[in-house]
Image 1 (cartoon, rainbow over the protein chains, first blue to last red):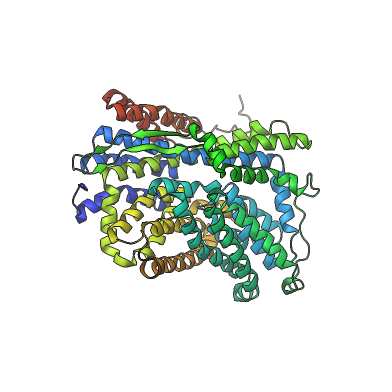
Image 2: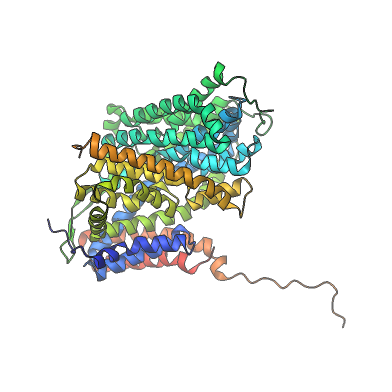
Length: 528
Length: 70
C-alpha cells in the first residue's frame, strides 16, 4: 500500500501544525472551541493542499465525512441536553438531587455519593458540564467548602465522561477507529476500573486527606467493584450508552446500603440534611421516570427482533475511494457513520415524548416546558456544535490527507514500547484542549490507532486507552473548571480548583497508563 | 441656558462584532448544514461547481467565530 508522503522531521512538523494551532490558540490565546476549531480546520486544509497533495475532491469528501460524523455526535448531544432541560424545567432534577442527600448523614459518604456516584449518573444522562453545574452547588448548600465541592465533582465524575452523554464519546471513538462496539466497549470498561477506583479515593482525599481515605477505603473498594462490574456488563450486553448512567445508579445504591451498615452509622454525623427547595412537588419515582423510560427503551432495542424490524430505517452515506497526488489512498466507505433506530438520539426523543405523557397524567406538567427546553437547548448547543463540527472536519482532513498516519509513524518511532503510557496522556491532552471527551477522541483516536499499528501492539487496547484518557482529562479541562468555579461562587479563583484537580488527574492517568502497558506488553500481547 | 445638573450618560457603543455574534453564529451553524450536501454530491460526482459552493459556505461559516467577539 502506498502510504503517501515520506516521514521526515519537516513533514512531521507540518502534519502536527493543525494540532499545534489548536493547542496554541486554546492554551495561550484562550480562544473558545469554535474559533480555535475553525482556524485549525483552515490550517489543515491549507497544509493538505500545499504539502500533502490533496485535491479539492478529496477535501470536499473529507469535509462531508466530517459533517456525517458530526451529525451522529450532535444528534446525541442535542437530544440529551433537550431531555435534561425538559426534566429540569419540570422540577424533577431538584427532586432527584434532594433524595440523594437523604441517603446518609455521614459527610464523607455524602461527598462520595454526590461527587463520585451521582455526578457520574448525571454525566451519563446529560454530560457537557451538567454534573458540575448541578451537583457542585448542591454540595455547597449541603455544607461542603466551595473549592472542595467543585474539585471533588470534577475529579469524581471523570470516570464517566466517555460513556456519558448517552455514550457520545464512546460512539465517536467507535466511528473514528472503526473498531466494533462489542469489541472495544468491554475493553474500555475493564480499563475504566482504574479511574473508577482512583476517582473514589481521590474524592475522599480531597474531602478529608489521608484520614478520609483510610476511613472510606472499604466503601470505596466495594462500590468501585459494583460500579466496574456494572460498567463492563452494560458494554457486554451492547448497551454502552448506559455504561455511565447505570453504574452511577448502582454506585448510589451500593453506597446507600453500606451507609446503613455498622461501619459507617455513627461517625462524623452531619448537622442536618439540607432540604433542596423545601417541599417536594413530586415523588422520586415520578421525577426519575424519564430515565426509567430511557433505560427500558435502550434495553428493548437490544432485542434482535426489534433491531431487525427497524433495520431498513438505517441511514448512512457511501463514499468512494480517493487518493492524494502523493499516493496516500483513502478507502471507500459504505453507510459511513450509520444512524439506526438504536441511535441514542431517537431513544432520547422517544423518552421525551413518553415523559410528556407521564407528567401530564400525573398533573405535574408545566405549560411552555417544551418550548423553553428547546430554546435552552438551542442556546446551549450551538457554540458546542460549532466546535464539534470544525474539529471533526479538521480531524477528517488530517486523516484523509495522510497527516494522522505520518504523525503516528513519528510518535511510534519516538516512544517505542512505552507508547501505552504516553497514549493515556494524549487522551487527557485532547480533553484538556477541547473540554470534551468526544472531541478528544475525534482529534487523537486515529493517531493512537495508527501508532499502535506501526508499533505492532493492540489497536483495541490503545483505542480504549484513548477513550479512558479522554474521560480522565475531564477533571482538568479549563472549560469545566471554569464552570465548576462559577457555580460554587469562586469566579476569578479558578486556579484554586484547578490546582486541586491536576495531581489527581495525573495520578489516575499514570495508573491507567501503567495498566495499559501491562495489558499490551505482558498480559495480552497477541491481541490485535 | 444652564446645563442640566444631571449628567447625561453617554451610551456605550457596542461593536457589531459583539452585537450580532449570536445571530451570526446561528447562521453559520445553518450554513454548515447547507454546505454538507454540496460537499457530498460534489465529491461523489466530482463536480467542481458543487465543491466550490461547499467550500464557500464552509469557509464563510468558519470565519464567523473569527470576526465576532464574545
